[in-house]
Length: 476
Image (cartoon, rainbow, N blue to C red; front, side, top):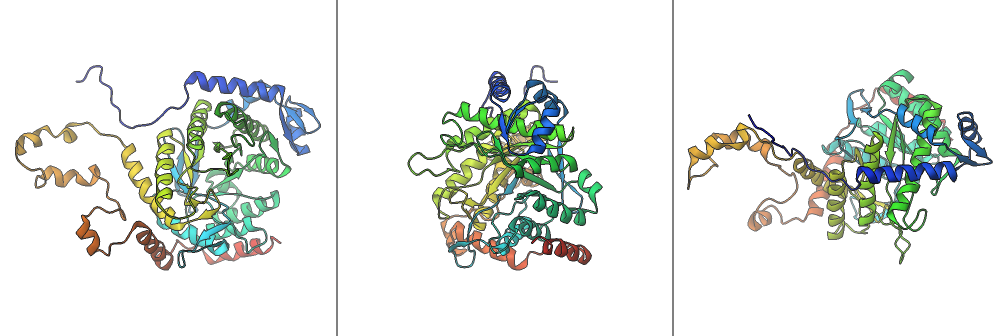
């Protein structure tokens, strides 16, 4: 028996104290009630006015009691399923999942190495690579289907045909979302299955600061009515669309998320909701929105803490780089950002493979992220203490000057005690040279090409594929 014994099983970080979370919360209530937000959609204004908001033109002021009601009704757990109906992610405090990003205008071609404009095939290729990598839990489009009209519908088609993993999607309009939902219903077997076992999450972004377009409001209400998980991701940028100070920017972002939440819960109480986004800086020299700056990831950790304070799942940005080449800068950015968000405990960590400050996709970078996530997950498991792991009898048997390599205890425990990378170097210089002397980019590029040549995602039935083709063809 142990008395007064504390076990630190896993590791993590807390950026905000409980008191600081309350300070941000009460400041947000003041802003929402006194200043309000612009809702550029009469349907939303009408709905919110009916529930007690003050509406003057597009300006909607939200009273604190509505925020409290919304926080009381929103679920603290969101289950997300695979395309095949298997539970894939339980979005709740303590669980972390990693996925790719969306909507880059350029890709690094895995066959030429050159950066070029993205197309629909790039979306399909990214889905195939993500489907094959065991540490990637969900997918986003990565690239923009610039060769298609109604790009978001085509991107969703490319994703759902080439991976069975959950999808976080973007939609330009309510009509886009209606078409995408029709495709999803076809795949999962109807509206009831979609509501009970959703394989999709819809990304919704306000026009920071404190403004909601007609399209954004349509998506929030549609998702609530159909019980599709909604991800509210503010677009606050330090010194541009939000105050340059982190605390002030957190208030603006929190107000936008809370306003989204109130609208969602007023449309349908209990609708699944995810607290999302990040707060990057605008570089004052270049006016670039930096994806790799430490401010972005410190602020994201604070947003994860606010999500925990509200007991809702969280979504943040990581595994990305401002570098324009797959180089040492990219590797440093990727490692730092992934580790920071994993320690913070974000439920959905996205943008694996983002390069050039969110403008380009690198599939080799996704492979690097896959390796890094494996290391991070092993680190976060902590150190287990029990009779087997303390190994006192083994230490006695081996004794001073002995070796543990040949002992049965090593054979029985090494697989669960150690992390084994697939592509990272673990050999000496001669062994590395004998294996071809390849740097990580070469190995990652070979991995990408091998996946694209040989990995076959689980196929959909022909009748489902035909129905999807009809829906996509109708999106003119």
